[in-house]
Image (cartoon, rainbow, N blue to C red; front, side):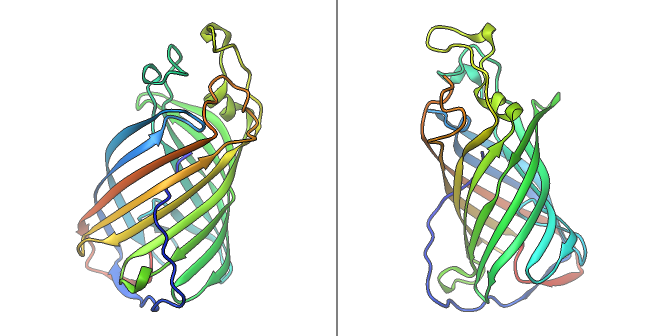
Length: 277
């Protein structure tokens, strides 16, 4: 429901990424601009621009990373780690979407739940990992909150660090299917009888396969306190459980995003870290 795909240039045996001293904690502001589909299998994209504050903490047993991941190290070995993953999706105004016109808007979505990471390869410059993730999904219009169901999202993660030998530059590819319960499928594809109209009959959604998402993201430092992230994303929905919904409009979705983080405050205490996972 939310991913990025940009250019991935892989070279054999790029230079190793040396560990560097980083602040124990950072706080600052960021912003993201994204051209993204209104919902999975939508036929329309819209621009969204959102500023946000952020906090990064690189503790020995607890971390909050620049990717927004809370790592509590419930379990951590050389190959396995158990922590908490999070994701989200932008809101969509139904009056701007032909398929949903006259229906309730889609609110901002937040997802949170456990993640089991299985490291398949972790070399000096390349990481390959399988992330097994299950998350609860919540919606909000910034005034009210609602529970929208559950999603399973196993992902293959491939990360090159540094990319093409450029210090601090990183590329990351993610690919994985989404499986959702009936409640979440209904949030995207259900049509209550009161919203039925010619060309949009009432529809009750089913649980099951929602689609497959891929993302490719490029991250690079601008200064010691500013970082840039750019990417593209793609989603494939052919064969999804609710392909028959009148709100299912396109087998393939594409999107793009650009984000900037600016660290305004940094601790004097530092810690050694190779990357913010």
